[in-house]
Length: 78
Image (cartoon, helix red, strand yellow):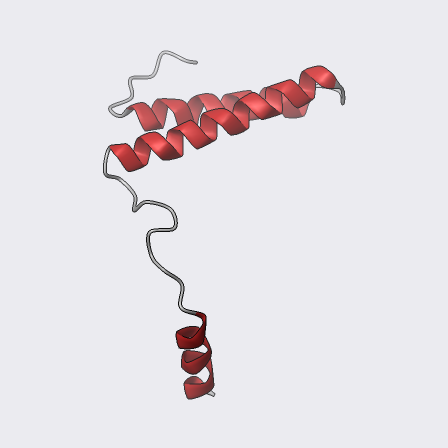
């Protein structure tokens, strides 16, 4: 990570995930690249979790999706 000052941990994790993904994309295909991409995904997931804990985003899946309501909204607008 660079010498940036992050005010929230989620920002630091997100930056680390982006840096790791850039490094992974520069690698030739193989087990090292796969491991680097998995680490980047884990850092991204950790950033999302930390953002939720900090109150930045709503909890994923907290809003129930009503399929019938979505269909009626589409048919009403047509």
